[in-house]
Length: 368
Image 1 (cartoon, rainbow, N blue to C red):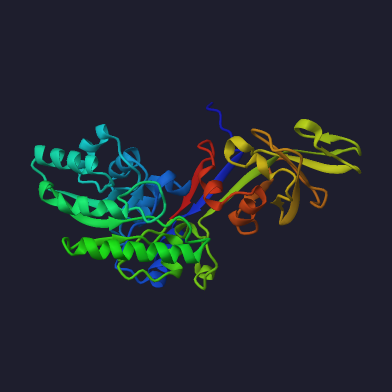
Image 2: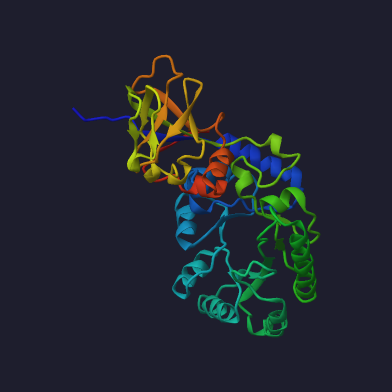
């Protein structure tokens, strides 16, 4: 008889919410084209499942971090082309050329290499120019633009399809962001004197909701796609969180006063306390930094404080207010009552890290 075991922790993903959130972005940004950012396994939500759910939504590209993610999207049978947002190694570029995946150039070396590969295979490769307006991560600097434009004639097997850059602080520093938008606009105008540029993209989630970028016609929603706005916005109330994270009680018992809980004994009961162990830990993505920060879980609709340090596979919580805590009871770790933003604030991090840190041993269950 095959053994079965219920998961200690699992995530529930509402793919309908992700489609809904994309439509909210379309209303807010009023762009012409969209590139849902699905890198890092769609922010922990599941790369193939999210891409299949969005493939028929009239989008231009799927934004991924590397060739491996692009390959997975193609193998999943999606029609939408992946766009590789991160730099590619020289040995990866042949695969990009052969598949017609989208990538960018941020140095002349990349441009020349892509051109030679495209010529070798008798192709005209659509490529995007990356410019650096202040992110410092890659792209042509403003004073390097003229060299690129002067050498375009050598790149006869490349079609300069688009121009892109990234805003590093659209959710934090409006003045700096406006300066970077102005820089991008100047560079876009100069390039368009020589190239038509079908796509122009700078708007991430924050910029899609809150900034006017005249040349931008391709928006790249990331966090907002999964139900959370990185900035206060009138559109925030319309977003639907797509992921909930659950676990189960494994043990429930009453500990006497003066009893230490978890490693280091950093929490000691000051009165008899009903304590339950929950089957999730930092190996699953429940951050160790949540200890002693007022973090909580929900059991039977009751808020239960985290006690002591987070361990690799388990946490302990105070269930004194739960009438009859029993092993197997479902525990809400993140969801309708505990948003990801609450966990991020208490852990001293950002929502992006919470989502992408949910480990591979946490199974994802999908609602379509």
